[in-house]
Length: 136
Image (cartoon, one colour):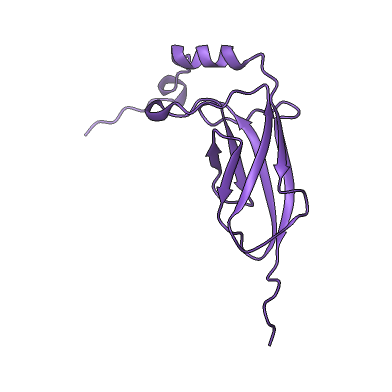
């Protein structure tokens, strides 16, 4: 069997993004998203029940394209968990485990890339204790 060595420079070639992606990039290029976590408040103590995340977003459209996929959206990350993709300003989330947790929300492009401009991200820390539980 004969093998021919091909250098990586010969195999890899940069190509332009598809036309639809280029249109989306151009349409979002002049946006300066501002994201703020409205609730819960920073350093809030949450109960061991589902809780509501409320957000305020300026200059960033939130689009759920249904079967076509997400448009511009928000990425919500709690600690090191997999990010949740949101196209709404409010979400009910499951109870947190006891301890302190970091909640990060960032504006994201349709393909999941985080926007890196100032104001496009907000982050708070919240806490969950087991209040009322008897200690033996």
